[in-house]
Amino acid sequence: MTPSFAPDELARCVRRLAAEIADGLARGAGAPPFALVGIRRGGVPVARQLAREIAAREGVEVPVGTVEIALYRDDAATALPDPKIGPSEIGFDVRGRDVVLVDDVLETGRTVRAAIDCLLDYGRPRRIWLAVLFDRGGRELPIAPDFVGRVVEVPPATRLEVFADEVDGTLRMTEVSS
Amino acid sequence: MSAPRPFRHRHLLDIASLAPQDVVQVLDASEVFFEVSRRPVRKVPTLRGKTVINLFYEASTRTRTSFELAGKRLSADVVNISTSASSVTKGETLLDTVKTLEAMRPDVVVVRHSASGAPAYVAERLACSIVNAGDGQHAHPTQALLDAFIVRRRLGTLSGLTVTICGDVKHSRVARSNAELFRAFGSTVRVVGPRTLLPPNAEALGVEVYDRLEPALRGAHVVMVLRIQRERLEGALLPSLREYSRTFGINERTLAYAPPEAIVMHPGPMNRGVEIDPRVADGPRSVILDQVEAGVAVRMAILYLLAGEAGAAPVA
Image (cartoon, rainbow over all chains, first blue to last red; front, side, top):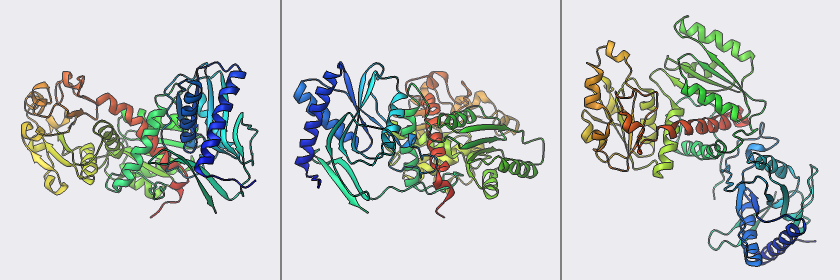
């Protein structure tokens, strides 16, 4: 499948993902209140948009947090200090809550492992779920998503990252082939 | 959007070597670690397997504890070595110690020494990164960075401010490092105190010199109060602490010369009732305890930026 990353396709994916999350959490007795936590940086605009969709669909306000995983990378000791590092923001109590980790693109699973470790430093959630807008395969850790917007096939050398348009907040995708 | 770059320094020896963009990079990273320090679990695994040695030749509680906590909250192994500088000849002791340290394969050595230039001396002889935690009357870069962190948080900028440094400016590495930092961002730095405690070349440092508090504090955004060291009395630089306090002490009466929104800083330890009145130190405009909290975050940022591979592959 050749992926199309036009803004309206991204919007459709997010809507589908929001519905999946809302239904899935209801089925899994993931009693509200649950929370969305975007993984910096690409997961953050996706988490914010998901919260808006869920609010429109279900009429519930879902708190949104962010986690910075640079400090938890498994190559932190040898990687360059990350110049794009920014603070995590968890403005709610995660203890006993269902938390949905959100990322834009799932590949190796290493980022998700780091995000789980970071989240646990804020307390012990009842359950951590994983939602990704795109699953491109290529796992290097035993990590599986609970909710997927779309499965895509892209060449390994292609980098994908979602960002929010600075003017109107529309989700857009950068696609860089090296 | 220009690509962010890794930190381009291998050591932190003084403020003068840092460009304003380097300072901004340190302060931005410090915001990340400030958040870490307020979590239920105040520790991240980032520097697992790295070794930080605190080599302190001068008495210090606050700075050493701050560096120790910074290293531990980054999961580094932290070793503290405290030595008295008076026991042996300076050069020999340092060199001997440095050779011993080398065998421990540290990634970062934090050095405090009463001799100006000691950290630079160590930096030339060790393969690891060196952080200056205060050397003689030369520099105290992490103190200036944490002060800048607080000022940026409170006032939103480091530029176009008026920063008044009060007291023993002549002997103060804190004053020198802060003056360099704030001047580099285009802020005005004033110094005020008895003539005997002001540097003879103050104008050459680019600071404005005052001998009375009232004009020095007028329009100031930041009031930095320095500790008056009692040994200055013995050196006949000060007639009496009471007279100093009357003329240059920051209390509610003298602080009224500054605008109501001015913040009051002190690098500690304080002589309450001498250079600063307890009602000011504990008052609403004091950010003295915020400085202590910020110190850990800023030192975590420095260790993070220096201990990675960037530290091993410096840009000249």
